[in-house]
Amino acid sequence: MSDVPPPARGKSAIDWGAVTHAIAGLSAVIVGALMYVKPWAQDVFSVLMVVAAIAAIYFSWKHSAWVTGHWFAMLPVIGVVLGYLGWQWGFSLAYVTLWLAFVHFIIRGLQSLRAT
Image (cartoon, rainbow, N blue to C red; front, side, top):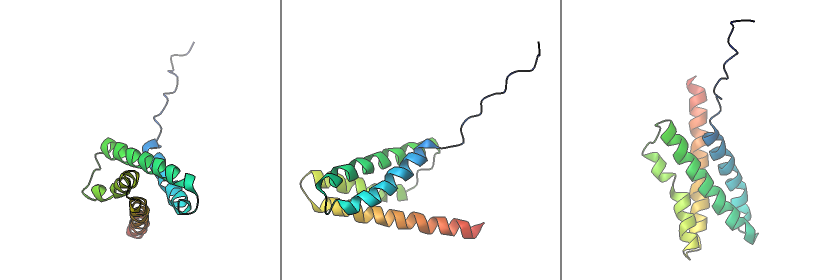
């Protein structure tokens, strides 16, 4: 018999909250465009926005990475809520602010790449 302990299972380096947020957010960008021509897309868009928001809150809390700008990122969810409360323009507000967040993410990513 050997006294060598079995190899320890390492913790996954994948942040599933961030992965969930990214997939839901990118899917919402695509499905959000469809909500203007397909009635079912509005509900799918709304669910994706809620999933993305919950995932963002989770990984921001997990990594103590909450910043003031994250409040602005909640505007798409507020737009969805307004849409379901009867103000149809709320869904458009959600979609436009989602695109603003997406463009901001791309710009910050490019700035990060240039800095390295």
